[in-house]
Structure formats: structure tokens, C-alpha cells
Length: 289
Image 1 (cartoon, rainbow, N blue to C red):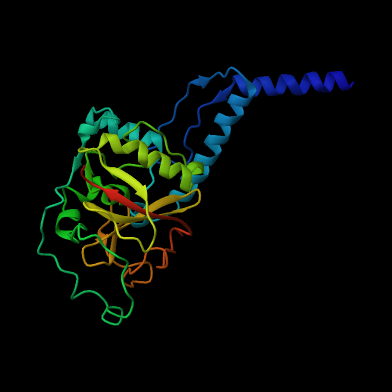
Image 2 (cartoon, rainbow, N blue to C red; image 1 turned 45 degrees about the vertical axis):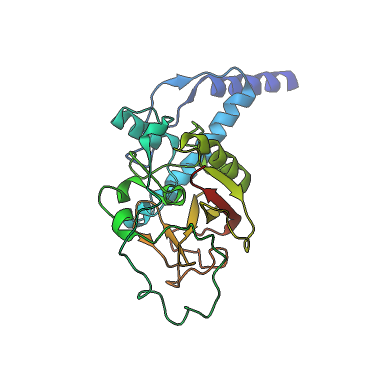
């Protein structure tokens, strides 16, 4: 009897393994293309690993599609199939660095946020040290129709513009696939460093202390993430305060409570749509050799 039960269970498992379909999106997301073919795996572990990934991505899509269109625009993360759709759309290999345009760090702007900063915050709390190589707050550029839809917080942190709708994920340039389950400090750091050789002038990304002063031709970036949901970056401006670009939405310099960002680690990162509760650290981004 036990032998029969064991054989039955083994047969059932094998049926699942050899008839495991590629996950077709049941949430009608326009970027999640269904596939009616069936995959076959060499072993049980590989099959269950692939199935587990579809479950995690399924959960992400279920959460994402409950957001309003406006809230969706503020989410930085996009799944791999979204990237492939954009790659096919522009007929570009998404590992091709020529599709990333580095913004001129010497670009000046007449945009001023001094009149917009909350006066009660100015001068009360000291800003973190700067190198003198920080870039200006420039919403006229980043919020323009030719830039805003093709950048997200990661693009803003690296000071680059892409040809892909909604920007790019860490690891995008080096051909790595970022999954919701991979949203961790170690994975994000590894993927970001892997992208550096694919940016013009071979930019560099290194850890730096919160109160340390960045080196020449460098500025500070802060990184955090919402477990299983999204990642986010902040960039220090030439006035010592911080700004950020939430997904394909506008460049702003205030946090979830509408306060000036003096320190991204301590600012309010809990939005109604997503809570970036996990702080990763501060980084020094060197944008030229």
C-alpha cells in the first residue's frame, strides 16, 4: 500500500514537472505577455525554482495592478518581460551601453529651489558634507517630455537617460535580471557595480560613510527598498539637500511628508502606495575617471 502511494505521488509530481506552463498573466497587465507553450525541466529542483519565481512575480503584479495609474508611474521596478518588450520596441539589445546617454555634469540651470524650501527647515538641521562636485537641481531638464518618461530613480542617481520607457533596473546594462525576491542590499550593490563599465567614461560606485565627504567628481547617493516591491535612490544636490525621481514621475526634493530632505536615511519614505522601509546605505558615485 505504501509503495502504491509513493508511486502515485511520484507520478503526480512528474506530471506537474513536465506540464508546468509558463505563467500567463491573469491580471491583464499590458506588459506581462502570456505564453501558451510548455516548459520541460531537467530536474525537480529546477522546476520548483522556476515555479516559485512565477509565484513571486505573480504577487508583485497583483500588488502593482491594484495601484492607481498615477501610483504606478512612481514605481521604479519593472519586470524582465517589460524590459524585453521595450528592447524589441526600439530594436536594441538591452545590454547595449550606447542606448544610455550620460547627462552633461557641467550643464547649468536657472532652476532654483531656495524659494521653495520650507523655511522652517532651512538652517535648522545641518546638511551632510558635500564634495563641491554635486549637480544642480534641474527639474526643467528631468521633467521635460523627452526625458521624464525614459528615466526613473536609478537613471537619476547615475545621471543618465535611456531610450526605454520607464527607465531601467539595476543590472539592466550588464544583462542581469532583477526579480522582486532579489530586492536586497547585497544584490542591488552587485548589480549596480556590474553596470558601471557600460556607462560612458566608466563610472564608479562605492560605499561611503554618511558623514564622509565624497571625492572629486563624485556625489552621494542614498539607496533603500521596499521588500518584494520596489527599490529607490536619492541624490544629493549642490545645495546639500537631496532630490529624487519616483519612477517616471516628476523630479522632486521633498519626502512622503512634503518635508525638505536633509538626510534620506531619516526622511519619511512611507508612501501610501509603497513603503521603502529598508535602508541600504550611502554610496559615492564618481561620474568621470
